[in-house]
Length: 258
Image (cartoon, rainbow, N blue to C red; front, side, top):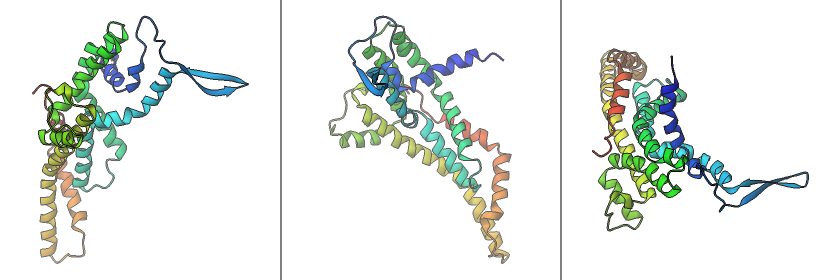
């Protein structure tokens, strides 16, 4: 199987998630404005590294935060956790499995956004066709548009007021990044809990029915959760629950520009 097309589509998204690329060196003349920093002394000689490289390595630590804050990952992983809780299966599937599934669904959802950002901003910048400012704006714009498409107006107004922008914003580009990310996360959490509520309903009904039957039979010492667990798993398997949940999650995100 030829994995090259898939790798070429996956690479832009992975690169775009790395804030260290803001300090990547484009083709052409090398920047000389940043000094070198001494990081160690070996044998009486100082070992120095360019400040841009040091800042890039430091920025790598922000990768998990960007993954959580600026992509579809938050909604997906919260819904997965609520689904496991509704099934009552404890730690099955494990956290590693849920996170892995959430990551791959996130990549599928964010792939169109990453391709636009790569084509319009990051690739021209790395080829020396755009300046850093223009490349950064073109690269971040698709992600800003994606987040804006998911944000609720009430959340945006709340954080705008908290940040002192009581008059609102004339256009989307005027929204500060901090306000945009905070509004996006709260909107994603609300949407995730709404989806989780709908997932919980059929499983709660099964718990109520089983508890009522056990009560009527005088089996009050037996845990209703223990008896209802096989029935909930059976229901979930019969309706092909994983496909339904994954499909619902992938289709729950608003299209950019909608």
